[in-house]
Image (cartoon, rainbow, N blue to C red; front, top):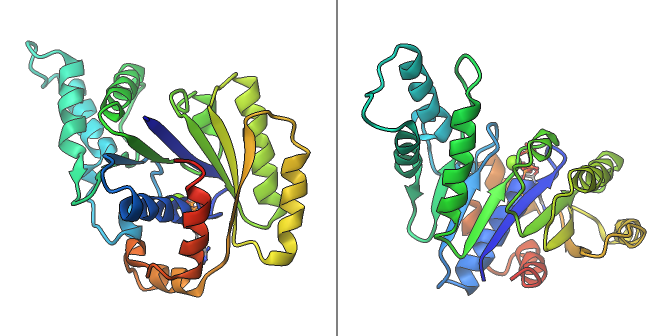
Amino acid sequence: MKKIIAFSGKGGVGKTTSLTLFLKYILENRNKLDILVIDSDPDANIADVIGEEVQFCDTIGGKMKILKDKIQKRQLPLDVPKNQIIEGDVYKCLIEMDEFDLLEMGRQEGEGCYCYINSVLKNVIDTLSKNYDITLLDSPAGLEHFARKTGRDVTDLVIVTDPSKMGIHTLTRILDITKELNLKFENIWVLGNRFPDNLRGILEKEVENIKISNLKLLGFISNNDEISMINLTGGNLLDLPLDNASYQEAKDIFAKII
Ligand SMILES: Nc1ncnc2c1ncn2[C@@H]1O[C@H](COP(=O)(O)OP(=O)(O)OP(=O)(O)O)[C@@H](O)[C@H]1O
Ligand SMILES: [Mg+2]
């Protein structure tokens, strides 16, 4: 079982939070699995949510900026192929935590068009994720990354929405783009985050009306004060107590994915 699971959805709906709850679920219940977490969101870091500090120079964006500067100043050694340098940089960025590895993509900076770097980068990361049982991808808010087809190897797409018209609008836009670009996923899951009981039926109906055979409602995670508190005080969401009500819900629904 090799799974690449991407969390997408409108900004602020709880992508990083639900991904981290999923990570906690795997760490608590399936601790034999090798896990890679890729944070491709340049703004909001998973590292923040789990109380780690990552410097820009230790992100892929940081390393690629140095590489671009060197290319511009013609400071690269001529005898080493560029793809080897990029591959080495990706491995240098891999943060080895006790129970999983983390790759921070960081912000892409630097002058000029470096399509070559980006395509090598994508291949290296695709190859890297083959070494893991589970790769969790935190996608940036918005839809541009879908247009760039960066979801190509994802097996499970989790679209997170909160109880808002905008959240559900982004959900349907993601599905439209997925269809337009003919992106194939084994499963597309809809996750309702922060839904009070009385509004859940609305999302259930919404999902029922979408006629996509591999699309399913994953379930709901309630709003939870302890989650807010950990976020506000800069704590580690992985330390959320096991009996936390939202973690209990998360556990039940994530068991459907693996
Ligand atoms: N179930 C929940 N209960 C309480 N707070 C929550 C819950 N889900 C998310 N939050 C809070 O909502 C805020 C946004 O969540 P999060 O960062 O996970 O969203 P996101 O979709 O990753 O945002 P972005 O698009 O900026 O990356 C955070 O402060 C987080 O702690
Ligand atoms: Mg996020």
